[in-house]
Each structure stands twice: as structure tokens, then as C-alpha cells.
Length: 106
Image (cartoon, rainbow, N blue to C red; front, top):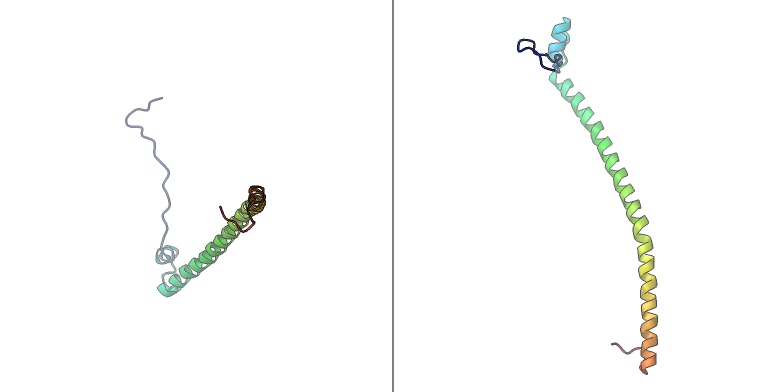
């Protein structure tokens, strides 16, 4: 479906963020504009809240990963221990069958 060259569709206007001063001026409250210090402290409190959230999220992810790794690694450790014990037992049996002593090394 084609449109005539002069009838270009237009996108809706996107609102842009306004500064505290612009908003106050628009509303007629230019005298009550917050100081830059209070604007900055509001931003830093938002940052610190975000930081806390990020830190707690990182901790939660770290704990979840550690639990998952432990869940997977623990059975492997047990299997390795079982195999090491079996190998030592079989090596001892082999030395005995060859007529050697248990302390003898290959």
C-alpha cells in the first residue's frame, strides 16, 4: 500500500524531561524552584537506593550460583572419593598378587 508523496505519516511527539526550574516556571512557581543542592541530594538518594538494590541483587545471584555449583559438584566429589578408594584397594590387591608389599610403589 503506497501513500502519495505529500501525505507522510507523522509520529506522535515524545515528551522530553524538564528541569525543576522549567516545571516551576511553567506552573508559575518560579520562586519555589528547588535549589541545585536539593535536586542533587534527591538524585544521590535515588542512586544509593539503586546501589542497595544492585548490591542485594548481586548477593542473591552470588548465593544462587554458589548453591547451584555446590549441588552439582558435591556428587562429583563423592564419586571421585569412591573411585580413589577403589583404585587404592585394587592397586593393593595387584601388589599382593605380584608378591610385593603394600608399601611398594609402581
